[in-house]
Length: 305
Figure 1 (tube, helix red, strand yellow):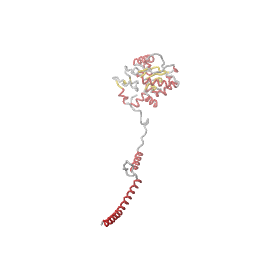
Figure 2: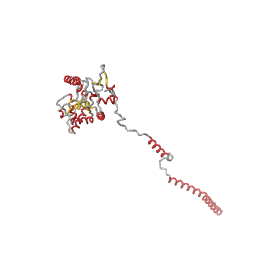
Figure 3: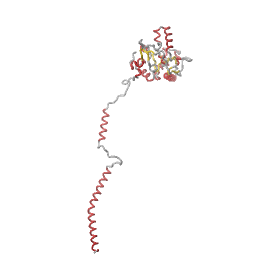
Figure 4: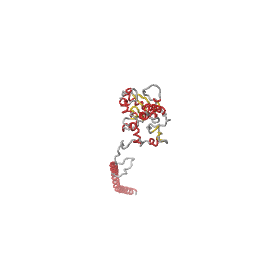
């Protein structure tokens, strides 16, 4: 009996193996083909590791770039600022109503005497009791010996004067300082003596009334040289020193306050020796535009001349 069962089992097993083989082979072939197709696409279009698939459709970035270039091209060019469309900027603190009081007699008095740009004229007076606080003696050569109040300047002006004198010396020029700060009382005595000598009207062309002198601000210095015997002479303007001062003082923040040809504006005769500190910026502007300080305030701040 056992001998009959064994062959039957072997035949059944063989039949099962044939059936399984026939059934699974096509399936394996299909799986293999699908895997090969997937691997081929992956190699042709690899996706970088740890990165998202590109979200923008093809051509979108290119269109955006073209649109940006078009927009930039259509923007108008902004012209560079220059002197014509950007005039010298105003400082609100220098407006007339911020710097001036008018008394019952109609006299104008400055209220900004401490400013480096205080405007002192025959119309604009300094209070009699005003005296600068930060005055020093500049380290320059003077035309006289000994201690004197007129050796003093405000510190800003004094340091700038030192630079100016050093620059002149490098050019082989020998400038000397002769008269800086003057008090109200000192100016009063000077004007009175001048009036006695030549009369009040003539005196006021060459000397200021007390309260109307820039020397009281501590920002002005009279300079001279040996060619005019250390005096304050109009001929100083034709000396090497005088010509150099005219052309170079602005580089150090000074202006020739009463230039030739502007007498009707300043109210004083030509004084090539009288230099006034206003700072490099304004001094350069006045030099470039051939303006007096009076004209500057009329042009930029609408002061009346």
